[in-house]
Image 1 (tube, helix red, strand yellow):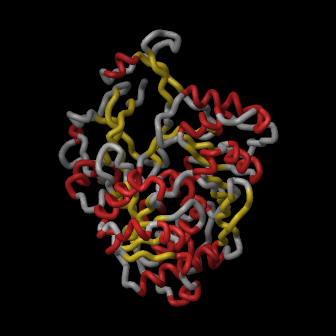
Image 2 (cartoon, helix red, strand yellow; image 1 turned 60 degrees about the vertical axis):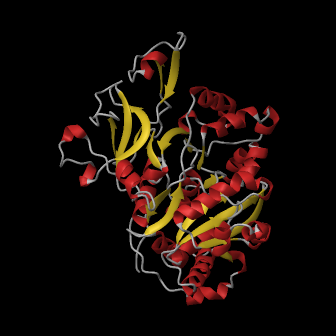
Image 3 (cartoon, helix red, strand yellow; image 1 turned 90 degrees about the vertical axis):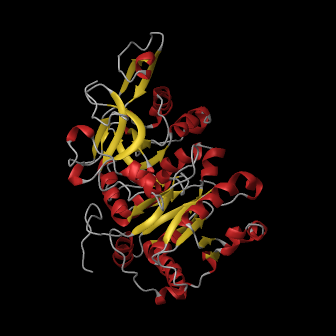
Length: 462
């Protein structure tokens, strides 16, 4: 395949094609580096090494005739997951990133794992030999987990890579299942195709200003869509180095995240709102004194409600150490749209609006002074990314809201997933919505229906 890769990987239809190209044309370029305790450089992977490991894992899966099967991916923080994720793609297996069972908290962590395995009808588990030994007793006590084939990918002979055969998957082939949190209902598997992830990566590249000179760092869990898509897949898509920290490293000492950004001149890194607040609360002036955050041009903030106070405190604390206020990117997204729906524009400052709380509960926007009683300040999550069509619809009448009205956020784009795994009714309700005031035959962008996000937004004009 003779291709030339420019600012992005838009020429490729699958992640397999993309990684194979990088392994052929950029074999020695370092792709991922794991930072032990967030400080010491540990294992790393070049594109050639990642491709070799992925082919070996893929070849073993092909020996088991597993194409089309579902595989749980249970890994500790580190690079083994990245190899296994790519290996499942190479084997034509539908990978399911999931939190590994915690031996100390089995009663809390095991039920979710069992629910995912049952819902997906998973037949395989890819993991490490260490995790395999930890869960041995647990497996023996659970018939479903015992029935699945468990594979320790760190024990696979890399010579198997020579036996790998291209699975000949296409853009519409499922790449992986991203399970929802299940905090308010049974976890549902969002079906992400190669087209979804490749198209969406191009959107992220534009929205968050990635270039071939960018450098990434992430501590977000790989089983969360934010950590997987922007944290790990986007660096591969962009062809840039990525430094990986353990989430526990961040929780124990959040300054390590900022120190890694400073040390490696990171340009792109992400976190939910609490992470920025946590950095302020759990760092001292002495710890901050050696930081240089001037390279950090995109600090995206999503995955949970964003607070004005958090953004202001973070800016106040770290602007003296080179952090630019315009680098904060409030964002909104969800797994059903692969990841990102909207974010602020480049070089703009975050936008806030104070409104009357009572009016907001009645789906009306009345602007107010922030010093008044009974008000709350909203943080704008910006504008839809790269051509994505977003409308605000009345959740009951299904009519598009007038400017300034509050309604449900609906999305139409090639980033929108194929639906929920084995849940046709839920897929129809959530992914096949039509605006009532556009006529029965009028649908969303490019003839596609809308995704109902279940989240409220404000129509333009306020």
